[in-house]
Length: 426
Image (tube, rainbow, N blue to C red; front, side):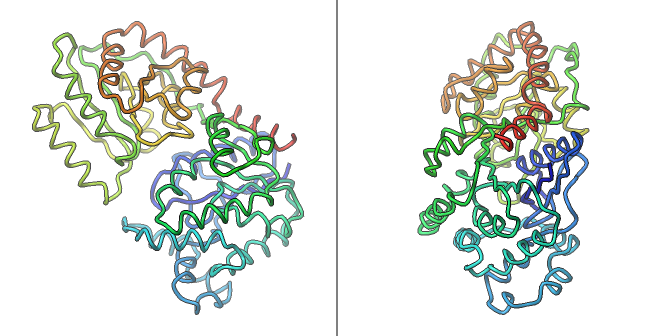
C-alpha cells in the first residue's frame, strides 16, 4: 500500500504520539509498504531512527505569524518555506522552553479547526497542492482529531480514504479555556463525516471517544499501541540489598510524581522493608521546575533526599539501562492514560509495574500480566501495592518474564502495524 501518515512534532520534547507514529511507519516500511511520514508544526524528535520527511507543513512559525497578522496569510509559499518552515528555523525557535498563553492556545486550536476557511487556510492549501502533485495514496492518516479539518481538503486533493487516529486529544481539549473548548468540540464534530475510519490506540479509548465526540462505534477500529523491541531485553535484576522504585515520564503534575513521592515517604516509615531508592527520569519543561523542586525538597525534609536521583531526559540507550536497572516502575497519572507507551517499554525490559486502574492500564495488564493495579487517587492503596511488590521478589521475577514475552506478542510494532492494516483493509 502507498500511505501518507501525518505526524505532529512536539519541538524539542520526546512525545509518545510522535514515537508511536515513527515506530509504526518504520515497521510498515519494513513490511514493504510505501509510507510517507509527514511532520506538521515542527520536526519530530524520536529516540530511534527518524523516518519522517525533511519537509514540515503547518510550520509552527508560519502558523503563529498567520494567526497574529493578516499580512503573513498572503506571503508566497516559497518565502514561507525559505524563511520559516525549514528545519533550522523551527528547531531554533523551539530551543528554549517558552510558556504559552492559554488564550492564544485556544485561538490557535480554533483557527486550525476552521480549516481552509480560517486564518491559516493558506497552510491547508499548501498541503493539498502537495498531495495533488504526488502519486496517489491508498490511505491518508491524520494523527489526531485536532487536525480533523485536514480530512475534507485532503480527501478532495487525494481522492482517497481518510483515516484519523485517536490518541489523547481529550487531554488537550479539556485544558482549553472557554469559549474555545466548546467551539473546538463543535468544529471537530462537524468534521467527523469527512473521515472514513477512526483508529483508537486502545479499547478504552475507542469507547471513550465514541461517547466524548459522538463518533459512531462502527467507524472506530482499535490498533493497540506498539513499540520496537529489538534492542530491549528482559535481563535478570542485579542481586543487591536495595530495591529501586522508578518513575519514567515527563516531569509534570499530570503524571503524578508527587503521588509517588508521597507514597515513598510513607513506605520509608514502615519497618519491614529493605533499603529503598527512588529513581526518576523524563523530560521537564521550565514551567514545571518549581513543582519538581518542591517535591524534591519534601523528600529532603523527610530525610530521604540522599535516596533520590533525577536522571533528566534520556536517550534510548540510557532509557533502556534505566528501565533494566529499576525493580518496579510506578507512574501514578492523574489523568486517564489512553496509551501507556512507557508501560510497554518497562515491561519489555523486564520491569513490573504498579499503576492506577484507569484508562488503557487495565487492558495492558490483562494481556501482559505485568504488575498490580490500585484504585486511582488512593495513596494508601498505592503504598500497599508498592509494599507487596517490594516484599515479593519471586513474584516480581515471574511477572517480568511473563510480561516481557507478552509485550512482544501483543504490543510489538509488528502487532500494531498488522492491526492497522486490518483496519485499513476492513
